[in-house]
Every structure is written in C-alpha cells, then in structure tokens.
Length: 109
Image (cartoon, rainbow, N blue to C red; front, top):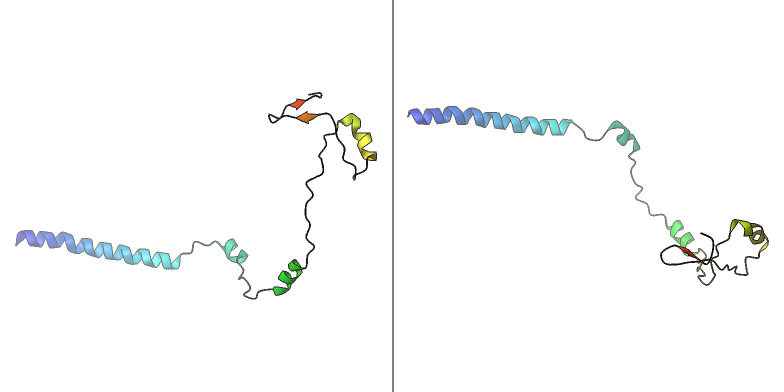
C-alpha cells in the first residue's frame, strides 16, 4: 500500500504539470504571432482575376531572332577613332585572337 501511494504521489502532480504545460503552450501559440507589423502591412492579397489582355498583347509581340553570324571584334584603344567611323554592317576583324586559356595570341598583352 505504501508503494502505491508513493507512486500516485509522484504520478498525479507530474500529470497535472504536463497537462498545464501543454495547455499553456497551446495558449501561447494561439495568442502570439510570428509575423511582424511591417510584414503585415506589406502583405497584399493577390487578385483572383486573370488579366487576359496581357496574354493577348504578349502573343502579338514581334518575335526577334538573334543573328549569331556576326563576328565580334576586339578593338585596341589606338584604333578607337577608326571604329567610330566604321560601318555596323561590315564586320571588323583584328589579328588579336584569344586562346581557350584566355591568353591573347598575336598581339600585345
């Protein structure tokens, strides 16, 4: 009988303590917010209306296909005045090329 009363003396207060702890945690979670006031003011609801006029405008846009046939040139600062007078339709070339390692070959480094 003594062992049973000692057991109940420990179990009942422990059960009450754990129950109060759970109730307090649920109450604290329900009353406190993790969203700051700044975030609350910045949050705006998304409009449920789908704007079809934007899709129609996008489908009517002109399609631009890039031309990858033009050559890219490297111009020295001394040749800058020549490049200002050069036509855009005629490709410019120089003898300075780069290797896969990035080191310039055939020109000043």
